[in-house]
Length: 131
Length: 386
Image (cartoon, rainbow over all chains, first blue to last red; front, top):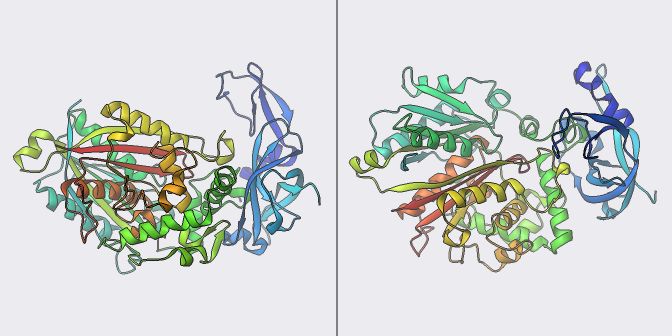
């Protein structure tokens, strides 16, 4: 992971910063330069809520090399309470007990590391609420 | 725009071709297509390739392949749309002939995927997904299609058995295709109990990693007649995109780009799905075939799985799907796949599909649907034999 590439994603990954279109109110995560709904180009910064429900999930058993030490791990798409959808790992749970519709909260976690000397990447993961 | 006809097709036996380079593989398929067409020259060639850079460290494929094909100074381009690169190459070649810019154009595709490890291939393929908001978090391609599968099974009561039935059917068809990478037959039990890759998808739900190439020759009706070729016209071409990230889509159980591309192709051809006799569709995973057949309008939403189980998409069914064996059995060298789909459509329309997989009721109109990533790009083409 090249440091500049990691650095420019910090607002999204560390603080869940999103852009809310000043014209139509659409919330975009990550923020964009133009609203895909109305074409407007002005946004205000908003912070995503940290709760939502799981729309779908899968348990990855054949993982890419950066994630083999975490395998098996669950991934999922959650819809947050403001309607924004996110992709992330689902962690701190029994992966065989996951269900569509399950409530999750977002927590700040380590995502992947780049060997012993490289960048340690942090970001968000979903945690089922009953844990 | 002029009418455009496919007059030649060529591919090689697909598989793990360790003895052959990307150049060899490409030139074999291209020579087969040129030979089948009987043309004495090309005006241009378009190559679909997803990632020569990551798979073999080679870009600038237009020039390399034109050189190795002995086409000195020919106009040659490489186009990319992930796993839909082949379909895109076909569209660009079609436009070049239809516009009058060139008379004889080769649409082709190639991918050499086994010069890297399985992990290297996973990395290269994952570049078709959203690097920062999917792959960063541990997404894989089986994982993304698994998310669609979980959502589809939850919403429509699609079953494990239905997914397995797609693999069984496609391997049965592929067993009759001399070019298929995995021409073995399989059973529902075998697929349903194969190793889990990304739940609910198992290894036999997944298309393989493949080396291979495919090429077709496009020209005008006049030249096709002079060469004495059957007139197999491209009557519809549709192309659409969707968000690259799966989570940005309103519905996880349909493929909007496929629906939109099909609508464009139908409008151009002045046809509906009812006029189409059979289709090659992008079954990179078993769930993909089910969702694609629904998104194309062949079956209502949620009924695609049941249709497979009932045999409606088999060789004797009401709407045969993937008579070639599909990506599942034939193999999936990503850049070549879209072109190989066109080859199967042409063979069926000519009545020359090998080893008993030729459709009994001779088809008149066939369709090919090729998609990139988790459905972020799609090309649909409709061909009709005169």
